[in-house]
Length: 163
Ligand SMILES: Cc1cc2nc3c(=O)[nH]c(=O)nc-3n(C[C@H](O)[C@H](O)[C@H](O)COP(=O)(O)O)c2cc1C
Image 1 (cartoon, rainbow, N blue to C red):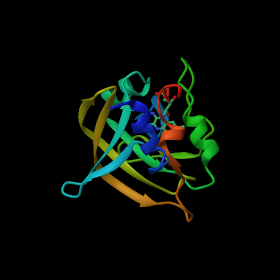
Image 2 (cartoon, rainbow, N blue to C red; image 1 turned 135 degrees about the vertical axis):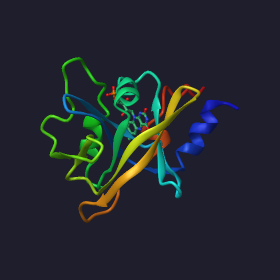
Image 3 (cartoon, helix red, strand yellow; image 1 turned 90 degrees about the horizontal axis):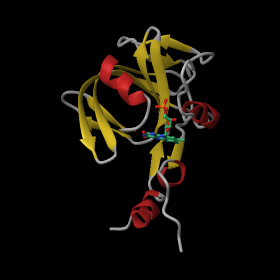
């Protein structure tokens, strides 16, 4: 099936915009993610799908932790900040209000809510890696509505030209 058709349908599929923060201590970072979902009640597991080429992948593989920070409706600018590609010597978490979660990753204290996860498994699925996290802590932090996006518009790789 053509990728364009897949994206047309994705454009009708609202997803939550989140920031996955990863790592701990000096080795930490974060990226905007919308390809995420709960996957099991027993045990409590959820997953994030991360492009195999992203800088974040190596960190996720080595520190094996992430906090999925669910953003509030007015935090699109913060999502944009974490959607920037990481550069050497750059820490996207600088100047962002945060505290350390049980796993050591950063809880963004202005976010709506979070899940703190230990990576228990990763699975290669095409051009992405699914990181399955065991949820060790979760909480609602602030009042508000979640930020959502039509995933096809805000997150897809090189939509084929229409012609
Ligand atoms: C709204 C939105 C949702 C995104 N969702 C994902 C996602 O689910 N998985 C992913 O790999 N990248 C996603 N991205 C892209 C990454 O956030 C972006 O490529 C980032 O630069 C990767 O960070 P890194 O270079 O520090 O690894 C999304 C971007 C935006 C704006």
